[in-house]
Structures are given as structure tokens and as C-alpha cells.
Image (cartoon, rainbow, N blue to C red; front, top):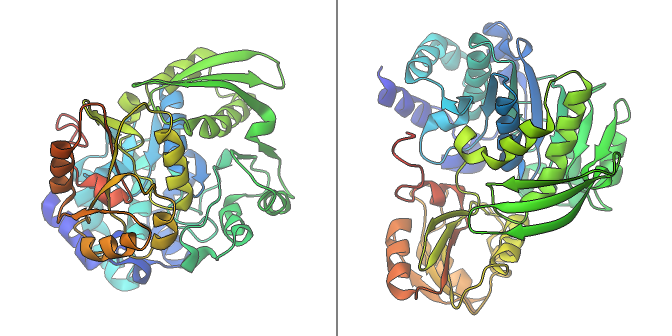
Length: 434
């Protein structure tokens, strides 16, 4: 098989959550353990950091990877889902794994695939771990796919675990209350592995404290105070007080959503723990790493400005907590009329998200080209019950083109609602990267 044929095999022959939803989810580590066992348990052959959370885990993972790269460590990064290219999931120092490796790995384990019938995600986890082991990375940042306790990534024993925040998402798998979901995320907390919580609430803290009975746990907001944030077109400037040293540092993040300040507290806490373990990471490494996350790691789709006059932003916010954060960011941007290009997948809490959206905006309802996407016309009907008005478009690029025609130069245009929708935007990742 060539590369395209290999991807076709992976995407169509294996149950893939992004394509079919719940039927692809396996709340069990058995297949991952079998796969990695047959591969010589590559997850034990490199150091790692484990990152879970409802929102912010992708940004947190990329920030950590950028800092570690800047400090000179060969750094693996596993994230999901991908926007455009499958290999976005598996990188070392910002470079995608090779097409040849994807082909060879898939060919090698085909008999095992046919024997145990793993999911797409289980295969990609095993692939990533094998790649990082073969390439002898110094450390790999591993983002949880869904939940934590039963996520396929949860067979590693990391240097440090991070949980970003907790919100109501994937309730059909993780529970329909915040404490239940926190319990699933807390499943990544392991004996004698320190844990950092970027953000907590009165409902989640008792859950985390109980899960960390055999290890140390720290809370980002108790280690660091955000003194001031300033949003600019290209950077978010964050002034931070280290409560232990009483020192104040200013960081410029090229991930410029104001919500990144809370993720930063967890990142700084995790780096502090690594420093105490002997990892040589200076304050200048942190400063430089945070200011070059996008170029170092190839992160896209997080408050990514893709156009001016009107200012055009794309963001992968797709659940209640993510949309709330996004709306808070929108308020910080000077604009006249707000235009929202919007699409979601069927298994999200669509009505709760629609209830949050501003009625004064102009909407362009659309859909990603996957089975899970809710039809644009059905989404429009649901939105009308929340007094949200706009036309429908069959593709996100058609919707963006229509919005650009209607918007004035002083307006703001935001594309959001689905990771898969963002991934279909023309040019979302520069062709030089792919």
C-alpha cells in the first residue's frame, strides 16, 4: 500500500470516532495493552507527560512541547484529532512522523488488527508510542483522547500529569455531572506521579484530592496568580506572580486567546515539577517556548486569525465550556457586527450551545463533510428556536465566502462549533507545512 491507500485502510476499516461517533468508542484498555505488548511495550521506552481535560488540553500539550523543544530536548507530541493531515497527531520537534513509518507500521500489524479488531484511536496510540520509542525521544507530551481513566493513552507512567479543566462534554461516555466527569479525567492520576490541576471548581476539587491520595497534587491558581492580561492581534501578554518566589514574570504567548492564561498556570506548574526532577529548563526557555508555540509545534485552530478587514478568526470551540470561553474572547475584540460561521456534530449538546450564542449576530450555518455532522438545515431549525438567524451552506468554505461578501471591514467573523469544520477550511494549515 502507498500512503493514501494506508490512510484509506485506517479510516474506513477501523471504527473511527470522528466519523461514526459512539460506535467507535471502546471503554477498555485491553486492545491497547495487547497492541503495545506485541510491539514490545514502547510506552515504557521514553519519558512522558500526560495531559487530560475537557478544554485546553491541546493548547497545554503544545505549550509544553514548545518549551521542552526550546530547552533542547527531543520532544514527541501526540494529539488528536487532526485538522488536515493524519500525521499532525504524531510529531517530534514539530515535524510530522514520516509517511513511510505510517505505511510500514500499518503493514506490520495488519494481522494483529484483523485478530483483535481495534479502533482507529487504539491503533494511532500504539503507532505514536512505537514512533517515539524508535526515534528515541527524550520526552513525549501525550494528550488524552477522551476521558482519562479508560483512554487508550492511559497505559503510560508519566513524569507529571496535568488536568486542564472540567466541563460537560462526551456525557454519554463520561457521566452527566461535573463530579462524574472529573472522576474519569482523574483516572490519569497515578501513584507517586505528581499532578497539576490547571483549573478547578468546588465540585471537582474533592474528586481530584481523593484521586491523588498516593501522590502530590497542586493547583495552578494556588501556585501562580495572573496579575494582568493584554490581548493583541498576534500575542497574548500575561503577567504572572509566582506565589512561592514572589517573582513576577511577563510572558508573550503566540496562542492569543485570553483563555490561555488559565492553561498557562498548569503549564508553569508542570515545568516547575520537571525542573525539580533535574530537567534543565531555564526561565528563558519558558519565555521563548511560549512565544513560539505555533512555529515550534504547528498548532492551528485556537483563536487563529486568518484574515483582516473583516478580522476573521477560527477556533475549535465545540462544547458549552469552550463556547463560553470563546464568547468571552469575542467581547475583547473591537468590532461592529458579529458574523458566525457555525457547524456542529450530532452527539454534542447542541441546544445548550445554541442557547449561549448571541442573538444579534448574523449566522452562516454549515456542516463538516463527515457522518457525525448535523445537517446545516437541521442546525438552522434548531437555532431558530433560540432566535438565531442565518442562511445555510453545504460547506464551510462556501459559508466563509458568503460571510466575507456580507461583512464590513470593521466587523468580526468567527468560524467555530466543530474541530472537523475548522479542518476543512481552505489554507487552515499552510501548504509549506503539509
